Amino acid sequence: MRTRKPAPPLDESALYQYAVRLLGQQMRTVAELKRLLRRRVQPGEAGEAALTSVVTRLQEYKFLDDAGYARDYAKLRQDNSSFGQRRVRQDLRRKGVHADVIEKTLGAAYADVSEEALARRHLERKRIAKPTNEKEAARVVRLLVRAGFSPGTIFDILKRWNFDQAALASIESMDADQRAPDE
Image 1: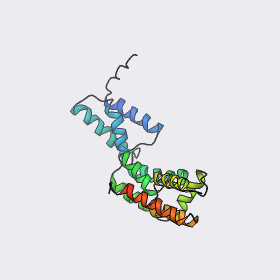
Image 2: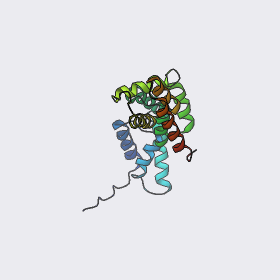
Image 3: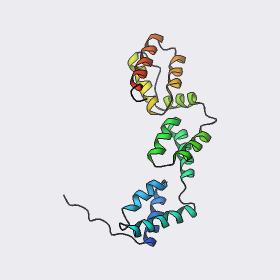
Image 4: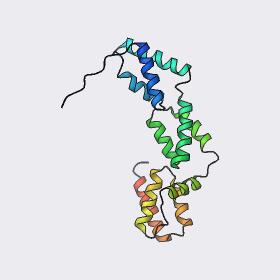
């Protein structure tokens, strides 16, 4: 198997063009763009200076804006994927958005949204029917947890489905047991 020869380092002007091309392909956060650009600059202070200069220029032209990215990302995940606030927060952290920006953005994006209605929409999107046994109910719980919904909302949905209360209590206790070591 042949290994690829590393691309030669780019000067500041070429690095700017490369960054604009990357942003033209997909929305990116400052952290994501810096990670991609670091591979294309020469190591050391000169490379870092070029990287900083390019990122600053992109921010001045409003091509790169973490707050705008977070706002758009939250809106898209809410509308298209029906994800809960926890999932979107986790995704934005992974993408390198600052915690203050995330909290401010999610507070505004999810202010007028019923988490239960969003969770129900997510279940409809996934074509999940009312569970008939504990195994199916546990599957619904896992699905909604992965989608970023709070345990309270999840169990409210199961209770409104008139799911067997004894089975619901056993799932709730299993869920509490699984969360205890992490907290």
